[in-house]
Amino acid sequence: MFSIILAAGWPIWPLLLASIIAVALIIERAAVLRRTKIVPPGLLASVVGDFRQVGVNEEVLKRLEAHSPLGRVFAAGLRNVKSSREVMKEAIEEAGRGVAHELGRYLNSLGTIASISPLMGLFGTVVGMIEIFGSPTSSGNNPQALAHGISVALYNTGFGLVIAIPSMIFYRHFRATVDGLVIEMELQAVKLVELVHGDRK
Image (cartoon, rainbow, N blue to C red; front, side):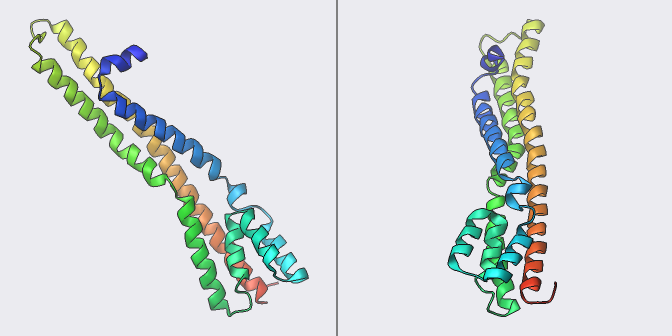
C-alpha cells in the first residue's frame, strides 16, 4: 500500500489528508447523531409531569437544557410558558433553529470532500500523465513501461473515488438523520405547547 502511495506521486497527499478528515468527521457525527442522545425517549412525558407537579423554576430549566438538544428546545418553550401560545412557539422555533444548525455541523465539510475527491484524483492523474509524456526520458519506445506509468497515474483517480463514495453515502445518511430528528423535535415541541396550555390531556 505504501509503495502505491509513493508511486502515485505528490498529488495523492492532499487526497490522504482529505480521507483522514472524512473518517474523523464520519466518526464524530456517528457518535453525536444518536437518536437516544438527541431525542431521548420519555422526555416529553417527564417534562409535562414535572411541570404539572412543581411548575417551572430556573434549576429545572438549566437541568433540562443540559440534558439533550430536545431538552434545550423544551426549556426555551417553558421559559415563556406564561406567555401566549404564539410567543411560546416562537421561542421554541428559535431554539430549534439553533439546535438544527448544531446537528448539521460538519456535514457541509463532509459533502465538500465527497464532491472534490474525484476532482483531486483526476488532477493527480493529469499531473502524472504530464510527467510521463513530458519527461525527457519518456518511455515512448517501451509500451510496457508506458503502460505501467499510466497505471500509476490512475492510482490518484481510483483513490479519489474510494474517498468520495463512502463520504457521499455517509453525508446523505447523516443529512437524512438530521432531517428526521428535526421533524421529530418539532412534533414533540408542538405537543408540549398544547399540553401545557391545556389543549391536550
